[in-house]
Amino acid sequence: MNDQPDKHSKHHAEPSGLIARGLDYGGIAEFIYTTISALALLDDEQVGRQYARSNPEAASAIRELTRAVCACGHRVQDMNPNRNILDEPLRLFTDEEIWLCDLAADVVAMLATSGGLHGFRGQTIFDKLRDLDKLAHTHHWKSMVRKADPGPAQFRQLRELIPHHKASR
Image (tube, rainbow, N blue to C red; front, side, top):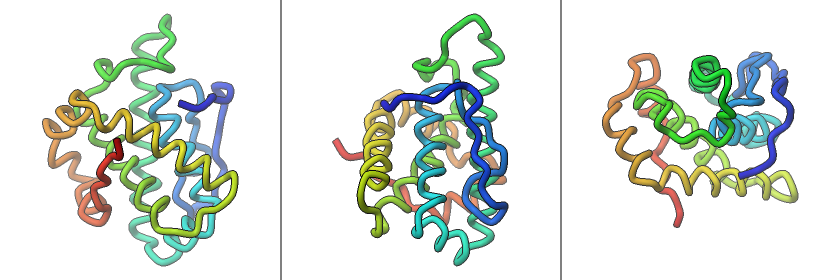
């Protein structure tokens, strides 16, 4: 996966975007960082801005999802203060937390594959999606998502709106 910035990475999007204001996603598990940083890049792209303007309720739910996904990473980090959790295996996360990460990865896939991404930034987003696909294609990931289905009640409506992305091999 891609390099991570220092542990104080924050995204300062407008409240109408896809990423919660002031979200700290540095120094947490790499798959969470990859997901949130891809969404942050998409938030700055026309496709992300257009989606947020056209679907304000879904954008609000996605902002809440980004908060929940980051909270998962921070929970694991706080429970294991003496471990480097950047490359931490899934076993430290609950089934429900992986379900949330899976939904967030599906948001990335939906926006990334809707067209309009070009150049270095577009390639970076697709690279992050490929990294997420590798993890989401594992038996362990799929099993955890199935066990948590239908997921937390507050995100079920968003899950209905976001298509399931089939991870490429």
